[in-house]
Amino acid sequence: FLSLLLLIPLLVILPSKNLPLNNKTKRTLFGALGAGIFVALSQISAILPTKYMILSVIVCILCASFSLSYVLPKKTFTLKPGISSLILARSIPLGVVIGIETLIPLILVIGRGWNTQTVALMVSSGSICWFLGSYTQSRVKNFRKRQKLILIGGALIIPGSFITILGTFDSAHFLFLLIGWAISSYGSGMLIATCAVLALEITPEEEHGNISSVMQVGDSYATAVLIALIGVLYTPLSNAIHPIPFLPSAVMLSLFSILGFYASYITYKYITRTH
Image 1 (cartoon, rainbow, N blue to C red):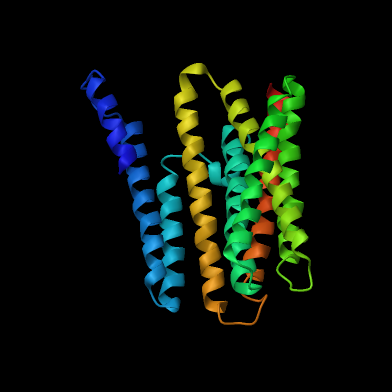
Image 2: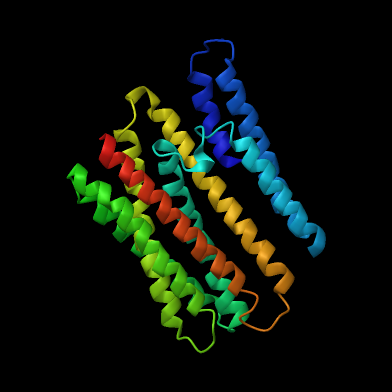
C-alpha cells in the first residue's frame, strides 16, 4: 500500500495519451489480473483444512500458470530457446534459493530445536554470498565469458540444494546447511544479475522495458509457486518424526535446481549460437 502511495505523484505528472487498448495490452492485463488473484487465493488456502488446502493450492497454481501464459513470452513453459528459456533460467533458480531460505529455518527451528536468533544469523549470511556472486559477475567484461556465467551460476545451485537435503538429518553437522546455503546464494547472485544483463543485450532497446517487466513477473511466479509447494508437501507430514516432514520439499527443490540448470544450458547454447 505504501509503495502504491509513492506511485501516485508520478502518475499525476505523466501526460495522458488516451490511446485505446490494443489486443496485446488487454491480454497482458487479463493475464496479470488472473495470476494475481490465484496467487492470492493460494495464500488464503493455508487456513483451510489440510485435505482441502492441498487441492486448493494445486488448482490455484494451475490457474495462475494459465493466466501467466498471456503475460510471459510464448512457449515459456516449454523452454523454447531464447528469451523464454532465459526467463526460466533466472526465475527457477531464484525460486529454488528462496525456497531453501524458507526451508532452512523450518529444519533448524522446528526439526532440530535451534533458537531463532542463531538461525536468523545463519540465513542472513546468504545475503553476503549473494553480493559476492553479483560482484563476481560484474568484474567479467568479456561477452563470451559472461555467457558462461549462466552455466556456472545454474550449476552452483544444484550442489547447494542437494547439501540442504543432507542437512535435514540430525546426524549431519549444521555446516552442511551453511555450506549449501552459501553455495546456492553465491550461484544465484551470479546468475540473476547475469541473466538480467544478457536479456537486455540480446533484445532491441525498445523492448527493454517489456523484458524487464517479464523477468520480474517470472521471478515472482516461480518463487510463489515453489513456496506454495513447500507448504503443500510439509503440512500433511508436519506431525511425523524428523526429518520426514522436510525431506519431500528438499528433494523437490533439488529437482527444480536441475531443471533450472537445464534452462541455463539451453539459454547458453542459444546465445553462443546466435550472438
